[in-house]
Every structure is written in C-alpha cells, then in structure tokens.
Image 1 (tube, rainbow, N blue to C red):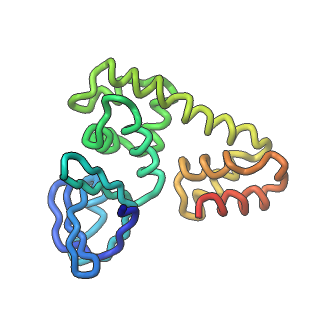
Image 2: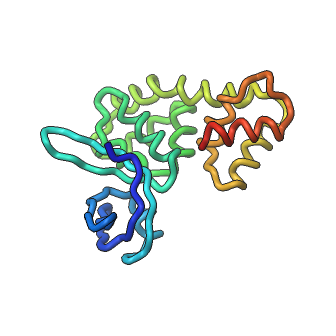
Length: 188
C-alpha cells in the first residue's frame, strides 16, 4: 500500500491536490494550511494514509510523520473516520490536539461537525493514556528532557515526534548526546 509520495503538484483546490508521480496523478486530501504552503508546479513530498472502503480509495497526505501518527490514532477510535480525523487536524496543530486530549479538552474536538460530546469524550478516554504515557516516559528520562526535545525540534522534527522518539530510548542511556543519537535512530 502507498505510504509516501514525492512528485509535482499539478492541481490544487480547497483540501485536494493532484500530485503527479511518475506520470500518474494521485488525488490526495491535504490540510488547507499545508495546501497554502505549496504552489502548483512545485515539488511535494507527503506521508500518505490510504483509506480503502467499498472499492473506493482515498489518499490523505501529511507533510510530517507526526501529523500522520495523530491521524492514525484518531481513526483508531470507534466512531471516528478519516474525514472526522482530518477535520480535527484542520482545527489545530497535532501538538495542540495532543495537549487538548491530555487535558481532557472536549470543546476543541466538538468544534468539528459530526463530533459531538460522546465522540469527543471517547477520543479523550481512548487516547489520553496513549499521549500521557509518551509524556511521562519522556519526562522520566531525567535531566534536560525538555532540552532534548528542543534539540530534536531544532533538527527539524516536531515536538510530538521528538517526544515519541525519546520515549523509546532505553533508561540505561544516560548522556544527552547518546539519548539524542538513540532518538534519531527511532525517528529514521
């Protein structure tokens, strides 16, 4: 299945682009704030989530892997499909969505058409522990955990990806440079 595409944007409107890759044009749904960052006839690389249902294939594209990760977590919740998850990601950055879920802020989620109180609460209940666990594991790495996250952000990774990568660093790794090296292995 398709996981990544790199090509030239030949058409864009609203939340849809056509990405020309090797002579084939792929229709890819892309967040509006991301569409505005890309011009027609520009090169574009995207992480792709293919959604197949009843013979129909929809491709959802993300500039950063952390956006794809949050999207996949959202659609893992019962009652949240790709269109709803995509609409949630339209509201705010993936970092802000993770923070809202950690805090139990259902109001942000309820701004999406079709996401009522029950669905918002279900998202919070099912995903809060996932995002809290990542936060706790990164916090438990000891001194300078925020500095380590900041260092990875300066290298071009998002805060969510940095936290996730640092959560996979073994506790036996003590020096900051070794922690960064291990985190980079996980990200790549």
